[in-house]
Image (tube, rainbow, N blue to C red; front, top):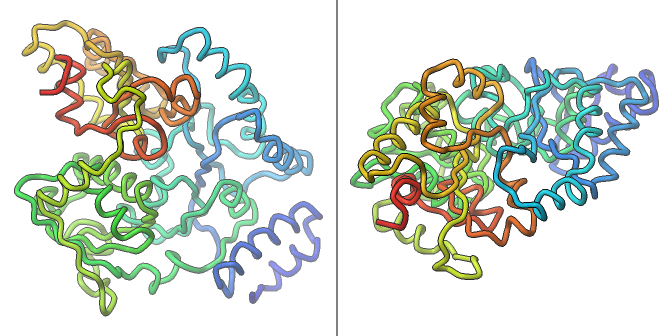
Length: 425
């Protein structure tokens, strides 16, 4: 790999042994993927995926402490994925015991390390760091050192920033070094689409279901999506961004998509059109039957497939302010139609702390509370990783949560029926 004089000096120890090891880590990472140089990280903030003080992560804590002890801080302040615990989310005595004694017992200690290294603020815990209220929204063309699959795919696709699908620890290394290796989605060639996805559905496709179908088909490739703009329009307004947030998370978790282009909508597709499509791209047609096939393919891994759901999670990735408002209205209306005052299944909506704070300043917060829905900042995935929670029949409309846990997927409309009326309709 070619290094600039500055980079070579750092590698030689000009800024200390620990910083030299940080840069060497970034270099070795790049060499694995054939990168020939490092490029500067140009975004104001970074985002880390590792947010949880899981007891078994001793090597991570040791590494972070070496950075802290060396007086090193991140070149950028950063946000980090959601906290794993919230006392307001239902859990019995044994579940809480496992959470606090055997799983996330190092949470406070780890958060202290994050603050020492450059955490943006005490509330910067969310997988949707790009939401306006959070304040970590990269700009078009900026080079990032993000991790968190749903944040990376959103930054690349909806915002037009440039970032590879980095892993935990690599994210903070790039931010500390101030450089990341140039390969993959940081290059013009790597951002070309090798799949053309043609949407031919008779109605607006469910975001999480469509994302799942595309992710499982294209895997890590870049898709260029035609026909979705007929449902989303040609402007990245709140509704379109919320849709693409959930859609992208499904492509990234059900597959390994780090970038997609939506014709006439996402910034690079608007600027370059079909010039983004690589020669010989594979065509994948999605119609109603294909979406149904994908839906029917999901395994049900509950011990009793006919069990009554005991918990519902919405908000993986975290819900936007507009989604909290619209879902409050939807739940209220559905409850009134069912003749119920509160949801019949314990239901948790999750969102970023900053979004929740903004929501609580609106009259919708009290209205949502009256429905019995719990509003939380946690990561549903981290909750479900508790083996006792994983045994519960939990439902969700998140394809990301379905993929990583035992939670069972239903569409938004099906979820609404279950939590307000009970049973599938």
